[in-house]
Length: 92
Image (cartoon, rainbow, N blue to C red):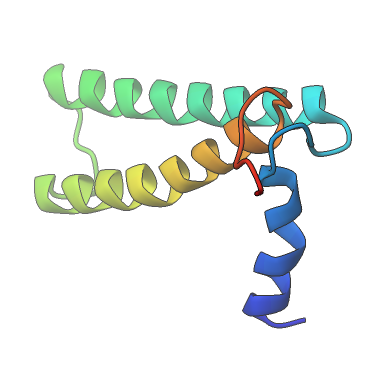
């Protein structure tokens, strides 16, 4: 399966009135992912604040945060629309 096939299989869930099967499970997965990323970011900030030596530089933290925000944000947006039948793209 190539990337285009994957996109075509994921797109019907974005139509208004449709949703992924097991929508509650997918919604919980997204919420858990957001919680884990938030906790890890907070723990890293607290560790640096209290003087613990973290083996990454500030620039690497910013780059990692940007990557997580862009990729993670894309998945969160997709799953927010794909797990709710009230949201989505209306087909004409």
